[in-house]
Length: 64
Image 1 (tube, rainbow, N blue to C red):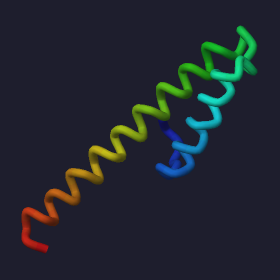
Image 2 (cartoon, one colour):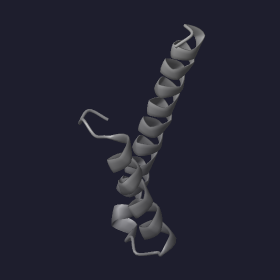
Image 3 (cartoon, helix red, strand yellow):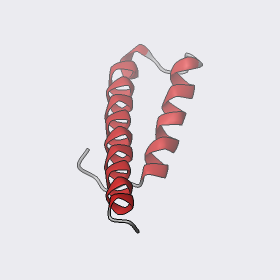
Image 4 (cartoon, rainbow, N blue to C red):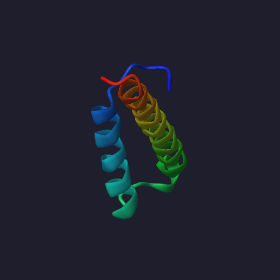
């Protein structure tokens, strides 16, 4: 995901995609691209959470 986005905006976009997919509001022509974008957003959010978790553990391990 080359563009710079925040965790919150990625999560919001992901929620919109899921709503669209669940509501069957996505045409067959758009289904693949929306599913791919959802996978990218999920990966971004997981990496962001993992990175934040590591930072916090590092802070607490240092006694701060």
